Image (cartoon, rainbow, N blue to C red; front, side, top):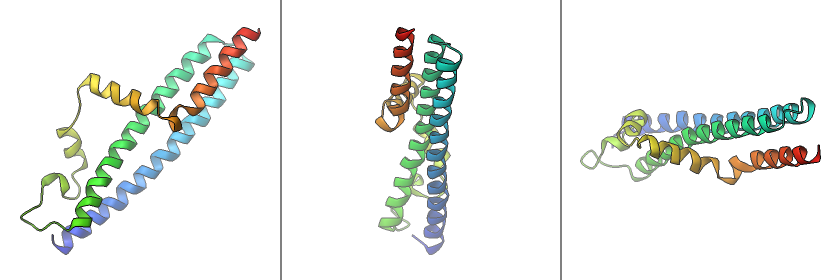
Length: 146
């Protein structure tokens, strides 16, 4: 692998890592927004069941957001592997060359059901599910306390 190719991979890695980190920040914003909206709907406006629906929608949106982040993470692993092993030109594969993220995604894109399963899988991870499970529990308790 030439110095130019390594440089391209390193540039891609920096770009992807920056994006990966920004997705984490946006996920936190979704969580904070969910807490705010849920509290307003459930406690100030007494919206009850509607607040559960809104929390569920925002939870799924966060799961979708984390799915995109996960795809970036998968590509980061490929780039890191390629950099680590400094493949020579006879061993290179298209998926290991820099700047192939979208092509690699389109070649491995799951079916619609596969995408939904991927979104749900991301949504039930503890770091994604945490505020939503608590918010849903708070709303349910609030509904029964009235």
